[in-house]
Amino acid sequence: MQAMTTFLFAIAIAVFLFCLRVLAMIVVLLVRVLWALLLASLRLLSWLLGLVVDGGTEVFARARARRA
Image 1 (tube, rainbow, N blue to C red):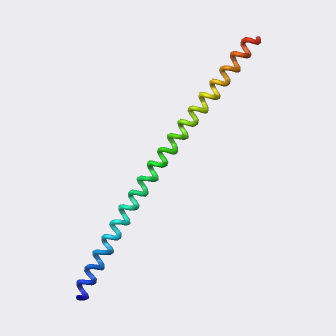
Image 2: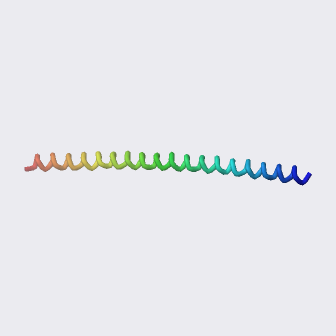
Image 3: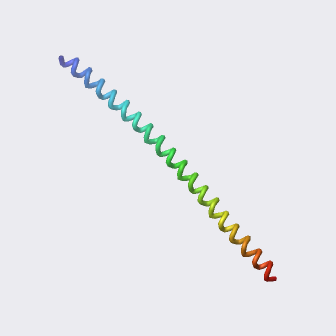
């Protein structure tokens, strides 16, 4: 009986460690995906801000050219 209990306990620990490993892999995957989304959104935001800034400087340059 003692050997059976020890064996079942060892199996339970192995299953627990396997589940922990799978959970860690899922967390790492989630963090990588969220990091990629964050970088993509920052890239998009900087591109949009660049368009706004470039467009604004273009408008000001045209206005200055008309005045001169």
